[in-house]
Length: 328
Image (cartoon, rainbow, N blue to C red; front, side, top):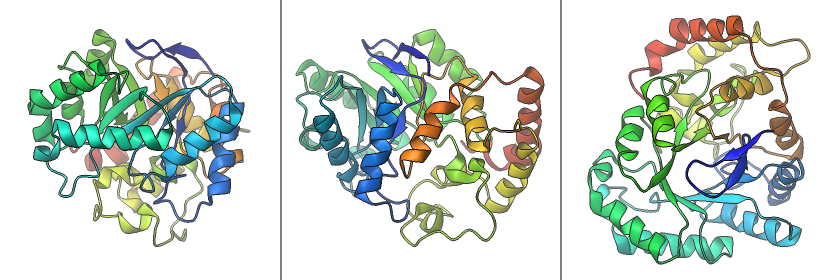
């Protein structure tokens, strides 16, 4: 894995990090023991960035991270969390300084730290991005020492472009993968120009790009790939990257033809993301230690050729873009 600066912040991170949504919940039955093993394997492999959120398992993910890091007692990785999705209803008016401070205090306790490395607004309503007072509240919380920096996790490219207009925003988290290529246009150019760190999430399109999912794959009732297939619980773009299931399976078979012999499709998909120099860190999840180690190893694959990159673009434009490109 490569190490580089996290935008304008004084952190050096690996280009592959650990996405901790799976160890929190909404991915079927993943035991706490497996979650701990996955995180330990990621750290053993050298990962220095962990991404979580206060709503992942209602704090379960944050608490597992705190316990693992306390047990290890070694050099601490950068830990990013998110705030805002605890609001019910989830509306812009709820992003008050008092509510944000409360969410941050809860994450501070869950993560057992005095200051959060990075807090991200968790896919806030678009209206929130047009309220400077929200970002002034984050500036005040940063000045008070409760957070070292802040960013925004967004659903849409347009939201990312708006968020980076605020000078205090140091990072944007956005879906970027073979099935969601739109960010690698104007948005990535603007992020690079402003030295904003980019966290690429949903890198495997909720497992579609692992190549292991078929029409007969069964998803548990508490797996978002079951209960959010049509956006019933949150933005449908978070599940299979918003790609209709049948269209995704068809495109996967096209992508499979490009994967070098001896390489998994998941590793290929992660390496594809790392071909963009705008991406600071990609955050695949892991259900167990084996998956975490495989994610780390993907960074060591040889760069993909221009012909292969062009072929993935053609597959995207032909089979996927009509479903997702203008939507997100």
